[in-house]
Length: 461
Image (cartoon, rainbow, N blue to C red):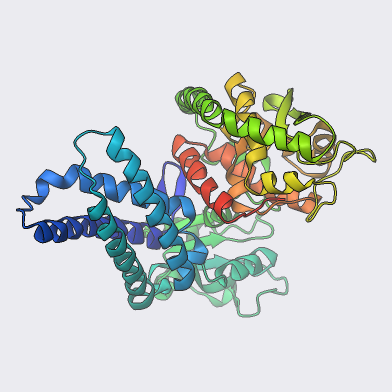
């Protein structure tokens, strides 16, 4: 994996994306050449069209990222990838039609865009055949040696068995006298030279999956392995990189303190984030004000009660604030006390079911963003009743309140809607990853992929 702005991107995804970018530029150029030939005009040098071609490629690829073309499912299934590519290219062409009116000097003729659309779809699908078929998914997988044969090593084995895994385990080494949970593990005392053993296996990384480190760390061996150019990683850091979340089962305060994250440079990032929130929330409220009013009227007609729903939530540093949404439940929804929403929740009204599905009920929260109580991106704010219970049952839950809550977030785009302590635990792992590795780049990635969640109704309840 390659680390870009503190966020890891698989080599296969990066290579696929670079090829896609080149192919999109080529599709735009072929479309221009084809249309020029039909009109009998001289196409001119390609250099003079690079601004238009580059804009075309960037806009379409941004749409591809947004709808999940580079997600694990799309990388494994050509049919799934084709559906996403079709939607992405169509959205990109629509966006370029608007860009053509706004930016002078960019020539996006409708006929040229139509040709470019079909050429792009064909080339992008063909690229999936090449990358997925000829090179194969295993070509980019790192070779990992695991030091340990217990529960942690077994978790790594299950993680490696997943189709989207970016690594393959080439061996396990039992570092203690305990009965190994991983049967194929080789006992440490059966290996004369651990550094040579790593070299013979062709391992590019060694992961410490020890259940107990005390008097078990082979420091001299690890030093030789490290100086030989092989990456040495601890279990928690490896899991964070491979899963995009912080593993609560193995998390300890010292790892949080000494690992990379919570950078002091985020002061500038926070200022930029706040500026974006102010501008974006103002524009969003102005553009969606008629939509909010229209659905507020429908909510009033559909069921008794106010159109807007106000509820106290816990914000940054544990401070309470009042969140505003379009009401999607009956007014007596919590007559028996506060509880999480469930699948096919009978408390949801007819209009409420629709506005939840397309996320229209979330639009009034832009007012909370404008006031500075929320951000567009961050952990979802919970109710005080739930927070007090979760802080008692889940370690490090309070740390998620060190960043502003958001309308969308890393947990929302990576984990389906949850309504239990176990779900809250999984979402907390993603929230801690976001709080630890926040950058404007990660915010942009989350905002783009929120479109995927909306389009394919992932997580709505």
